[in-house]
Length: 98
Image (cartoon, rainbow, N blue to C red; front, side):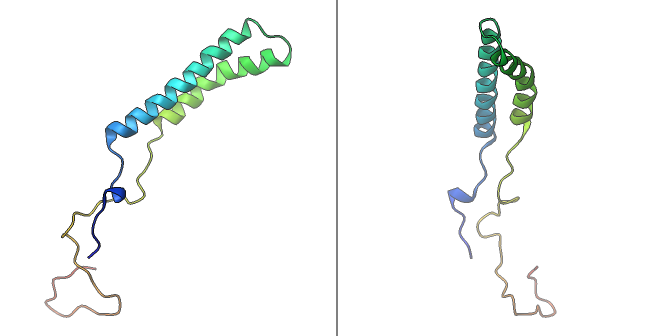
Protein backbone atom coordinates (compact mmCIF):
# COMPACT_ATOMS: atom_id res chain seq x y z
CA UNK A 1 0.00 0.00 0.00
CA UNK A 2 1.27 3.46 -0.91
CA UNK A 3 1.81 5.61 2.17
CA UNK A 4 0.61 9.20 2.12
CA UNK A 5 3.21 11.86 2.56
CA UNK A 6 2.83 15.52 3.33
CA UNK A 7 3.98 16.38 -0.21
CA UNK A 8 0.98 14.65 -1.76
CA UNK A 9 -1.52 16.74 0.17
CA UNK A 10 -2.99 19.86 -1.47
CA UNK A 11 -2.19 23.35 -0.23
CA UNK A 12 -4.33 24.57 2.62
CA UNK A 13 -7.04 27.09 1.72
CA UNK A 14 -5.35 29.72 3.90
CA UNK A 15 -2.03 29.34 2.06
CA UNK A 16 -3.75 29.45 -1.31
CA UNK A 17 -5.74 32.56 -0.36
CA UNK A 18 -2.62 34.28 1.00
CA UNK A 19 -0.70 33.55 -2.20
CA UNK A 20 -3.48 34.99 -4.35
CA UNK A 21 -3.77 38.09 -2.14
CA UNK A 22 -0.03 38.74 -2.45
CA UNK A 23 -0.17 38.43 -6.25
CA UNK A 24 -3.14 40.81 -6.40
CA UNK A 25 -1.45 43.34 -4.10
CA UNK A 26 1.76 43.32 -6.14
CA UNK A 27 -0.18 43.91 -9.37
CA UNK A 28 -2.14 46.75 -7.82
CA UNK A 29 1.10 48.33 -6.56
CA UNK A 30 2.47 48.18 -10.11
CA UNK A 31 -0.76 49.86 -11.29
CA UNK A 32 -0.30 52.69 -8.79
CA UNK A 33 3.23 53.18 -10.10
CA UNK A 34 1.89 53.26 -13.67
CA UNK A 35 -0.69 55.90 -12.72
CA UNK A 36 1.97 58.03 -11.02
CA UNK A 37 4.31 57.67 -14.01
CA UNK A 38 1.54 58.89 -16.33
CA UNK A 39 2.01 62.32 -14.75
CA UNK A 40 5.73 62.49 -15.48
CA UNK A 41 6.56 60.58 -18.68
CA UNK A 42 6.06 61.57 -22.31
CA UNK A 43 5.83 59.89 -25.68
CA UNK A 44 5.55 56.12 -25.97
CA UNK A 45 6.24 55.67 -22.27
CA UNK A 46 3.01 57.53 -21.51
CA UNK A 47 1.10 55.05 -23.66
CA UNK A 48 2.79 52.08 -21.96
CA UNK A 49 1.99 53.42 -18.50
CA UNK A 50 -1.62 54.20 -19.47
CA UNK A 51 -2.14 50.70 -20.86
CA UNK A 52 -0.66 49.26 -17.68
CA UNK A 53 -2.95 51.37 -15.51
CA UNK A 54 -6.00 50.34 -17.53
CA UNK A 55 -5.26 46.62 -18.13
CA UNK A 56 -3.69 45.60 -14.81
CA UNK A 57 -6.94 45.58 -12.77
CA UNK A 58 -8.47 43.00 -15.12
CA UNK A 59 -5.34 40.85 -15.15
CA UNK A 60 -5.02 41.10 -11.35
CA UNK A 61 -8.60 39.95 -10.77
CA UNK A 62 -8.22 37.03 -13.18
CA UNK A 63 -4.97 35.93 -11.51
CA UNK A 64 -6.39 36.39 -8.00
CA UNK A 65 -9.50 34.36 -8.79
CA UNK A 66 -7.67 31.48 -10.42
CA UNK A 67 -7.56 28.69 -7.88
CA UNK A 68 -4.65 26.32 -8.22
CA UNK A 69 -5.94 22.79 -8.63
CA UNK A 70 -4.08 20.10 -6.74
CA UNK A 71 -2.19 17.54 -8.81
CA UNK A 72 -4.31 14.77 -7.31
CA UNK A 73 -8.02 15.46 -7.16
CA UNK A 74 -8.71 13.40 -4.05
CA UNK A 75 -6.50 12.60 -1.13
CA UNK A 76 -7.03 9.04 -0.04
CA UNK A 77 -6.74 8.36 3.63
CA UNK A 78 -4.06 5.86 4.60
CA UNK A 79 -5.48 2.40 5.04
CA UNK A 80 -8.52 3.17 2.94
CA UNK A 81 -7.07 1.75 -0.26
CA UNK A 82 -7.11 -1.95 -1.02
CA UNK A 83 -4.34 -2.93 -3.45
CA UNK A 84 -5.49 -4.88 -6.50
CA UNK A 85 -3.17 -6.70 -8.88
CA UNK A 86 -3.72 -5.51 -12.44
CA UNK A 87 -3.62 -8.98 -13.99
CA UNK A 88 -5.93 -10.59 -11.45
CA UNK A 89 -9.67 -10.77 -12.10
CA UNK A 90 -11.98 -10.47 -9.08
CA UNK A 91 -13.73 -13.62 -7.96
CA UNK A 92 -17.39 -13.93 -6.94
CA UNK A 93 -17.86 -12.66 -3.38
CA UNK A 94 -14.62 -10.64 -3.51
CA UNK A 95 -15.20 -7.29 -1.79
CA UNK A 96 -12.38 -5.47 -3.57
CA UNK A 97 -13.41 -2.62 -5.86
CA UNK A 98 -11.44 -1.64 -8.93
